[in-house]
Length: 427
Ligand SMILES: *Cc1c(COP(=O)(O)O)cnc(C)c1O
View 1: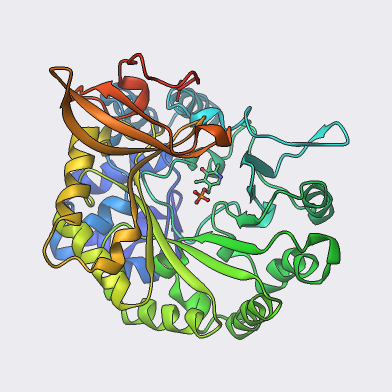
View 2: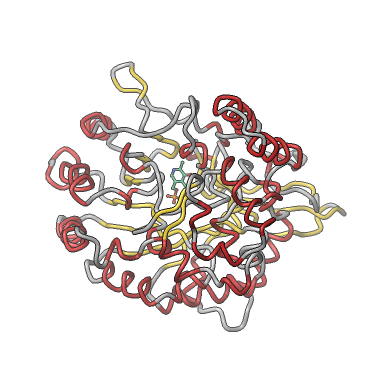
């Protein structure tokens, strides 16, 4: 694998053919946003003829328009005039702090305690599902420009998730008999060597007192960014044996694959990786946000969901992009998100098997909210919404409404109606 980062961006062979101003733009923007891309993405996924508008290019290459013009000019000026490392870093850090690095109260809410001590690598929002952030999995094969977890990938004093301690995890799970699902997330746990992953998984398979954890999910973008992980890396065969063992132990193994565009599924390597994962008995489900410039059209979703169904991948969630990082660039108004979802859902040739997908969904601090429809109610256009998951399970399936604001891009942009649940939607 050949990896390029902000320090080596100018060595990417394909960039040589781009205009000098676009090259400089990428170099400056890559100082702000986490940047990392590998040869697979560059050689197999990006259509260089359509750059800069190519959707996969937008997915991994940060741009000027993703930040405030004055921030871009500042960093460009400082780099051009040879500012010291510390001056540059101070300015970059200030820009990060202004980009809402931890949306949804992620650093303060949902942090469980064990023996009075906060567990940094565990998030427990919904009673039945625990998120685990293994410390060795807190980066990705390539970074997405829109990532809502971007703050985890920048070297800074910001507190991060991540935990090496498997015994704290198993101890916590043992004390939580309601937990059925453990979700390995990151970053991307699939950047970890199989041996590491095995160390985390084995207690779950062997320990009698962890039988209640019956589903193991792994959130990953490796099918898009490095399908070799499942095919011909040095420890790919071992990884498949680990998946076999998880399924063999009677667990449901779900690979929660992040997909944003049908192009990702056209790759022969990706298709072979999907088949190989499925041969272990693991189930692949797909999720991803709606993003301006990448996938904000119903045709893209119909094509992507049909391609997934043909490959035996189950569409799971269509998300609304969260308010963090270059959110202003990627955000799509909720009305348009709903329109994209409904148009795709109503498309004559969308497979019925794709229609278990839920969208458009906002992951908010009190729960997951689906926009169900827009309709005239009491003489006014309104959104109909529903909690499909809630921190307080009593709220699940609760419906509520809001005045339809055509510019609103997140729940916090909407005016509360009288039927609004009594919970805090700050993010
Ligand atoms: C989405 C999410 C989950 C998983 O919810 P499901 O509806 O079971 O897929 C768990 N924890 C957090 C914090 C989430 O945002």
